[in-house]
Length: 95
Image (cartoon, rainbow, N blue to C red; front, side, top):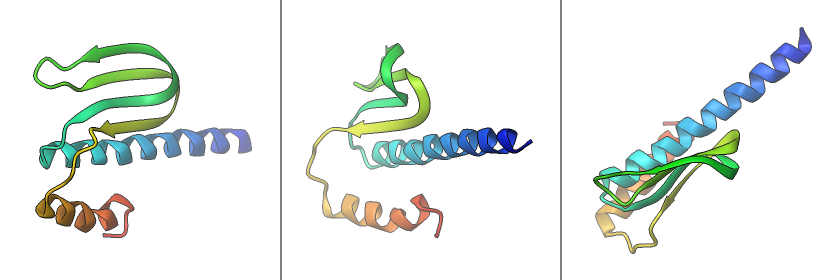
């Protein structure tokens, strides 16, 4: 029974990480910051596709325990910086 709870904890932590990175993705899109890639997992790419509207590449990777939202290196405006700083407590669950 203990191994079941350990595996369940690992699975839930993975889901939490993906949701957290999706929050970064949504925030960047809302602030009109170009997102270069959003991937679920790490390691070798198993499947990837490109958005028809934007330059975003979506991918599923071999080890599905993590996620990544890579955005373009742009200099944010003061409004974008303010929104990003204000959203930090919510990103870490204390907002």
